[in-house]
Image (cartoon, rainbow, N blue to C red; front, side, top):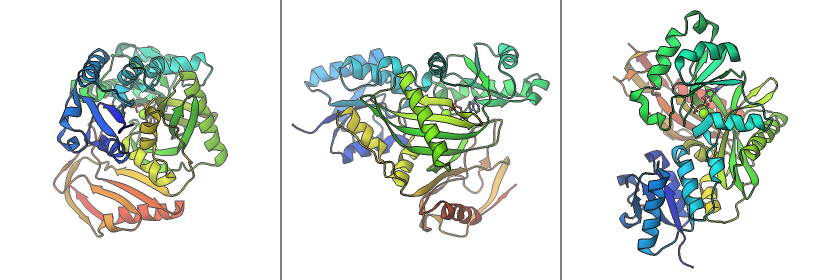
Length: 417
Ligand SMILES: Nc1ncnc2c1ncn2[C@@H]1O[C@H](COP(=O)(O)OP(=O)(O)O)[C@@H](O)[C@H]1O
Ligand SMILES: [Mg+2]
């Protein structure tokens, strides 16, 4: 048997280059079905292995891929996507071709449809936040009365927290004026790129108090393998930006087990199979509650985090899974890691920016990237904020992680005018 052929669907952004690198290091012959073959992938995907199509439209995607297979007289050994917005299209393509695939009905329940996933959980007696659906923001007040305050409003669609906000008593007093203005702006035309699949429906739901965690892993032939847990540090409310994450989650074993058991029950209810998953929960006083779950791996930085913290390469494991190879992950903690985007809270101009250390060279710093430059203006909500820097730290203990985080923060001097 020759080199195995892997078809990747949708390259999305530079962020996903690592998935192509993982496929390459597994010695696979890589094909790509996407809108374009970007310059940064030309070393990994040859021109003749690129299928130009619309990865957001399964009719077009399936037609183009089958035409390609027929004209080249080849067959793919596996089909995979790392993009939230192509979970459904990839499942339709892979199952139409009889390949290892997430079932199409389960793909519909990935986070592209947060309402359907809640509905299925509710039918299966799994606790989800109390919710109402509205198709018009004029109905906000009625929905808030039904779920109670504090509440959360969120557009029903893919990813990124734009348009997701906490609703408080103060908003009610304000007749929701500030809230509505910002939500309309954040879900409007300018932000369209983040809102692929937005249908105009919003969920208004009970605010669940508690820390934010995820359980991530893979399902192969009905067997759920958990790679580990992540703890997210959220930015200031009423917005919900995930600004940093710790791995492993800083929880007691019993709490961790409870989160994992809950995530497994959600996965079983939704019928996720032969896929990666990323299950986000809040750990409330009465236990874990689903925030959202996707039938794909967690984003790129988290996949890198899993390799460092647990030695679990989810990217390679998912590729092997779609190729029909048996996968295993050990999930033991190897390192304590923090991945953090440092945001500034004050609007203004960055008039001074200096570091007293060469941060990337400090022991335990795996990655450091200054994102803002001296002279840049600082954006704060309701604009989409840009972080000052991104850092990825890895240490032998939880305590030394904290010390290293402080060392990095203390070495940066800035002035805002
Ligand atoms: N019902 C809720 N209660 C408390 N926090 C919530 C609720 N729904 C969403 N959030 C917060 O908002 C963030 C973004 O919401 P999420 O449903 O994950 O949408 P997105 O697709 O934008 O990631 C979550 O990480 C969580 O912290
Ligand atoms: Mg989320």
